Image 1 (cartoon, helix red, strand yellow):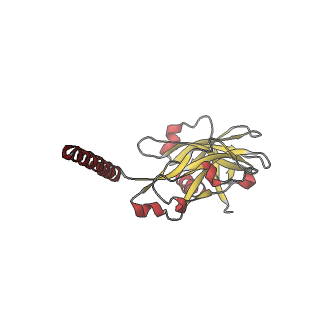
Image 2: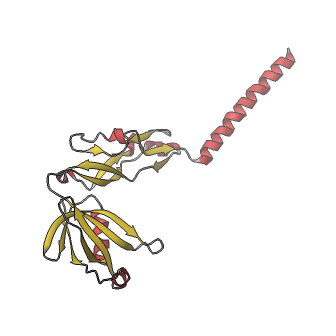
Image 3: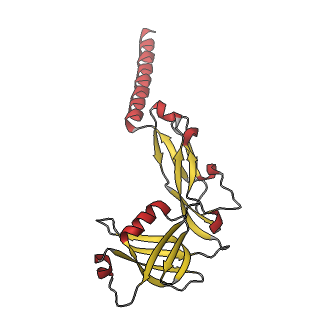
Length: 211
């Protein structure tokens, strides 16, 4: 597994968040079941590069002052307009202790339903699970080649995750991805059905008139 690491500075009470952000840094905090909260600051660019690769399901080696710890990105806040990170929460993990993590889906394969004019709609991008740190993975693969025709879907239960490793936080019948027909195609099919029905009614009326 890839090793991720970042260094942070301990934040003093005198430092204002506005000044921290102006200096191209982002404020944050690290805490855990056995870790007292520590306020910190990180280089914004360094964290952005790290987050793009590690996300929220990879263990990160965080160095704060003289202390090294293993953490996960627990929560992030962003500016509503610029999208820049404005605050980061790290969770210090304890080896052998189960934790909650959001693991992204990686969609693989080709859906045969696409050849029948269906579109593939992703209803979930990630899933929250409870597991031991050693069982954390970067992503779960979702093979969409099972989407043969419009109306087919893949639900959480279809992933068949190892229940001894992962406890799903949510419902197993939640829809992850589905093959659906575009509205234009649906409208065209409905029109065709109406025409067939109207044609059948006209034919019946003609038959009755002839009799």
